[in-house]
Length: 146
Image (cartoon, rainbow, N blue to C red; front, side, top):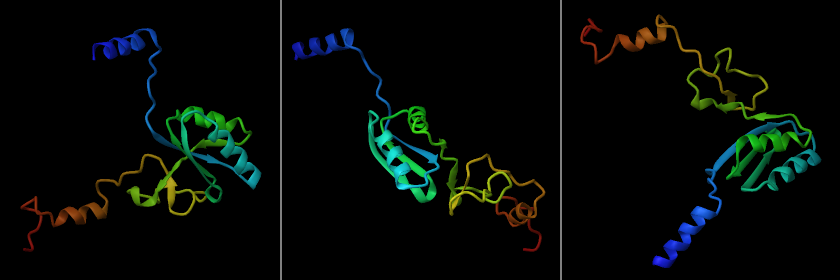
């Protein structure tokens, strides 16, 4: 046991200690028109160190990369293929409180997605909020009908 501890200490002291990147999924929006574009982007990303899986969804112009990679390096690698690329700017509609707010709704978004922007919160005098707090169990003076 003492020898193994000594050897591991040698590697820590004299060897380069690398910080491991976490396993993550990077989603990128890339304009792809044909099979050649799709293949070029997929091959460029697949050859990166740490990539475990690459999924290309041409209908949505979307590339999903899973692995121990840096998101900015993946984006740079995709841009080197000559394609216009950006991080995936959309989130599913069911995760957004107000999907049809002027900043969030985008006609070019794939079906079921809206832009990932800080959502507009309703005004305090909005009728929705008044009716929901009108019959509140937490406020004893909220309902005089009962």
